[in-house]
Length: 128
Image 1 (tube, rainbow, N blue to C red):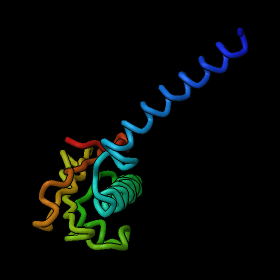
Image 2: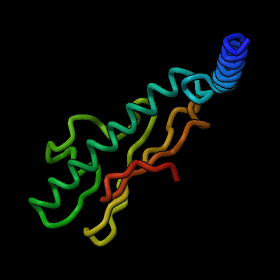
Image 3: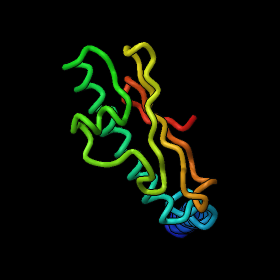
């Protein structure tokens, strides 16, 4: 009798776990409800932002101040264009050459509802 109670308890516990996991994935899916292409592009944009921020750090070390995205491209620190990459535009807001914030905004009208992302000298990608 005790063994039957243990098995029944295990079956109930597994059923509860299965129900919770199934309800979470059926509502949002593993990508949080975003279409796969959006997830792929947003990951790429985050990678681009990290590359731009690293280029800013290198520029600061050699020039003593931060630079615009265009200046980084002109110097060869960036190997891609900041205009309309993956449907996003990148722009640098340099504050007195001592602080920067790179903003990635959707440029493609089909991506207007996609997130705007940013990074600053702390190297943290955020969604303002």
